[in-house]
Image (cartoon, rainbow, N blue to C red; front, top):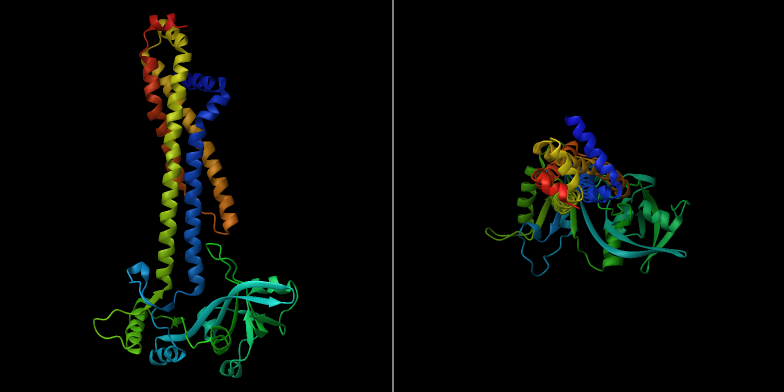
Length: 403
């Protein structure tokens, strides 16, 4: 009996194929959007974690000012760091493997007829160790170049492609503002980050060169600290904060005018943002499921009206009301399940496309897929029940008289 009911329901659905497809379109969009959003969101979260791990789980960043995300007050700019402060921090703390001073700005780098706007970084060789940069060609700065502030630089792969194409940049000179800088090294490519930013888009020069020829000051606006292997970063963070308070002469009860950020903290923050955005987008997409359910109920009510005479004949020749109810309820459930299956395929397809375009891992969640499919079935059952009950309660005499 159940199989016969399913067969009749399928026949009724395919008699009006286009109408049935348009009916389930809301379910398809809802299920597909939820699966695609969650898949891309989970891939982004995994990529964020992977990117941070590439930088090193033992890396900390020390920045001037308080972290606004943790309630830091906004006011006058905090005093910058100095090279001496960075060196003292490294010398006084055995837990630190290396601490690299760093200053940055945006600038246009020019070679011949080609130019590119990029990050200009002033630092020393400790930066390459702390940030885990490897050279593809050339060399790092020597002691004389660092001390004298000679105009030499190391460039990233994106700058090389833009300015030099396939040719070797080592030994060539590029211009940044009025400074002509000889290229002595090329870093190995790291590619795009999770959010699409180019990690290879930079030019690095000795800190003294940057301060004297680019910035016009002696400020250091960031220190990258790599703690020794085996040292807990939470402990290292607390000790560095205490040391920085001494170096900055911050009295008891006074707020820090600096922030020590753990890369694990950064990963957690970025993953949290990704999860929130994924949740919001998925919630919006889930509304389409409700809209699809309303569409199913609407079409089933139309179907009951169109088939009133058929229902009357079935009731008149002995069909029970529960059999009529079951037939229309099965039709609604099949419609929603059909939409759910198409939605799963569409969602996985768009999730795969999104992962490819964003260069993130493709990580579909079986739990979310089953949940979305089950929810689509529930939508069909809930929104199909009222039209089915209406069909089952028709008076056979009135139904036979219906034109």
